Length: 351
Image (cartoon, rainbow, N blue to C red; front, side):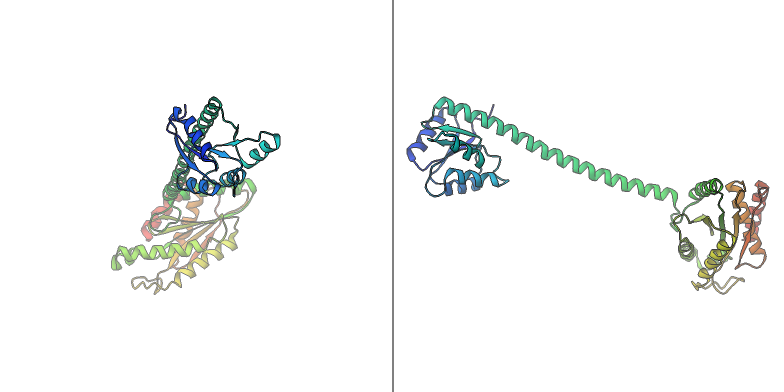
C-alpha cells in the first residue's frame, strides 16, 4: 500500500476547485500543496518534488498540457505521475493529455471514490517504480564495484604471474620460465622442421668485480647487461633470461648459425660499449661477456637439457680461448647428461 503521507500537488487556477480537491483527499491523510498557475506549479516541483500531481487542463498562461510536457521532459521529474482533471472528456482531449505524458484522467465534477482509487493506484505504481529504480541503482553500483574488484584482481594476478616467471633483479625471464620456454620452442621447431638457436653467456671475471666494487655495483652491472640482451630480442618469439648468477641465456627460434652468431656478437659488442670499467679483468678494460651459441638443426631430436649443455660447452670454449668472445657449435643428438655435468663443472672452475 502507498504511504498515506504522500505529497500531492493540486494545480488549478480556480480556488474553489483547489479547496474541493483538498477536502476530498483529507480522509486519506495525504499532504497537499496547491498552485494557481502552471508557472507556480513548476516552481514548487523544482523546490520539492511531490509524489503525484492533480493537474487542471484549462488554465491561463501555461495550460496543463504544457506543464505536463515540461515535467515529463526532465529526468528529475519524469517519474511523477500526473492525473489530468478536465471538464472535456472527448477523445481529442484525452489523446492530447496522453501525448503530454499524463497517466490518468478525471472528469469534472470529481467523484471522491474515483479520485481515491486513481490516486492510490498511481501512488502504488510510483512506489514500486521508485523501489525498482533505487535497487537498480544500488545493483548497478554493486556491479561496477565488483567489476572494478575483478579488474584489480586481474591486474594483481597478472603481476603475480609476471613475478613468478621473471627475475626480480633484471626483470628477464627466470630459470623456471627459461626451462619451459626452451622446451616449448624446441617442440615447435621439431614439429615445423625449423632451426633454433640458444646463446649462453656470462660476465667475465664477475666475482672479482663484485669483490672489489660491492654487490650493489654488481647488481647494477647485471641490470645493464640484461637490458642489452633484452634489446637483442627483436622478434616476439625471442626471449632473454637470467639463467643464474651472472649467467644469461637468449633463446632465438627460427634462427640459423649465421643469424645466431651475428646476434651473439652484437650482444657482446653492445656490452663492451657500455664502457663499465673493470680494473680486475684480464679480458678487457671494461666489463665484457663470453658466450656459447648452440644451433639446433632441422630434423634433429634432442632435449632442452641437451641443448643447454651444448651451448654451455661452447661457453666454456669461449672462456678457454681467452674470454670476451662468442663460440658457435651445432650440437649432435648424442649430447646428453654426461656433457651437461661436465660443462657445469667446467663453468664453475672457469668463473
